[in-house]
Each structure stands twice: as structure tokens, then as C-alpha cells.
Length: 166
Ligand SMILES: Cc1cc2nc3c(=O)[nH]c(=O)nc-3n(C[C@H](O)[C@H](O)[C@H](O)COP(=O)(O)O)c2cc1C
Image 1: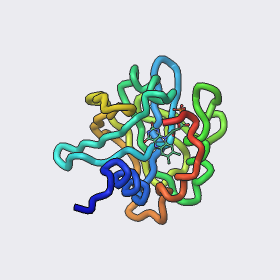
Image 2: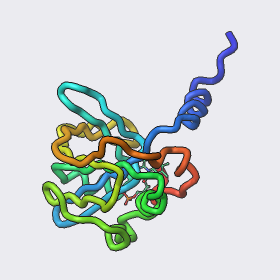
Image 3: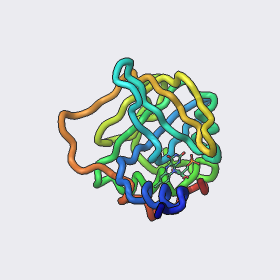
């Protein structure tokens, strides 16, 4: 049969998808962290569950290892610069939170100003899945309007130069 090599087909396919992007933030031991995340999705309706994949190379992952909660933000399309800040800089070298507006939210989580919507969540499990670790989340609090305009999606940011190689 005339199939493409599985790996090549898979990589081509995922490159075509245009899923929403998130900024995931956290704090532990007095340290704040956050990065741009594409590997994130709801995985259960009842109970409410959400999964976030954090690269084991990222500063955010290292802080999240000791954290009890994460905050998940979606960005409106006019927040391209915020996406770039969290996707191209690393907390290993830069203070991202000195370069954007934020406030302390539930459980001391850094909540970014003026995002389209966000929720905070308790970390239920950490599942090593390869070069990313999946954080299984129980959403707890947040803010979301009834409608949003266009959000930052993968095609808006797939040319970024990540702060850490994947
Ligand atoms: C399009 C795109 C998608 C990304 N998806 C993820 C992701 O799902 N999980 C992740 O941990 N990092 C992801 N990153 C990489 C981080 O956002 C990036 O390396 C960041 O600079 C890490 O910051 P930190 O070291 O402060 O955590 C993505 C970056 C880009 C540009």
C-alpha cells in the first residue's frame, strides 16, 4: 500500500493543526515561572480535567515539579507580544514577570493582566510521557467572558524561537 512513513506523516499532520496556545504560570518556594504551551487540552467533562504538557527542559517545568497549582491563560490575538515573551525567553535567564502586567491570584499564582480568559487548577498527577511531562489538572477558579474574539493560535507563533529547545 502507498503509505507515507508514519513519523513523517505524523509530523506533517501536527504541523498543519491550528490549536489554541496557552500561557501556563506557576509558583513554588518563592519562585515564579511561566511559558507558552501548545500541548494542552481538556480530557474529561465530569469530573473536569485538563492536561498540560511541560517540556522537561523548561524552567517552568522545574518550578512546577514542586508546585501544587498551575494557572492556564488563553491570549487574545492582540497579545502576540505576551506570547512571544513567554515563548522566547526563559526564566533561567530572564525575569518575564518584570516585563508584563500580572497580579497574585489564587494560591499565590501569577495571573497575567488582560488575558482573554484564565483558570487556576490543582495538580493531581504528573505523568512522564517522553520529553514532556503531562500535568493532570483539576480546574478550581478563573475568569472567562461569554464570548472572546480571535485567540493566539499555533499558526501565529510557530515561527517563534523557543527559549529552550524542545
Ligand atoms: C509554538 C510553540 C509551542 C510550545 N509549546 C510548548 C509546550 O507545549 N510545552 C512546553 O513546555 N513548552 C512549549 N514551548 C516552549 C516554551 O514556551 C519556551 O521554550 C519557553 O521559552 C520556556 O520558558 P521557561 O524556560 O521559562 O519555562 C512552545 C514554544 C512555542 C514557540
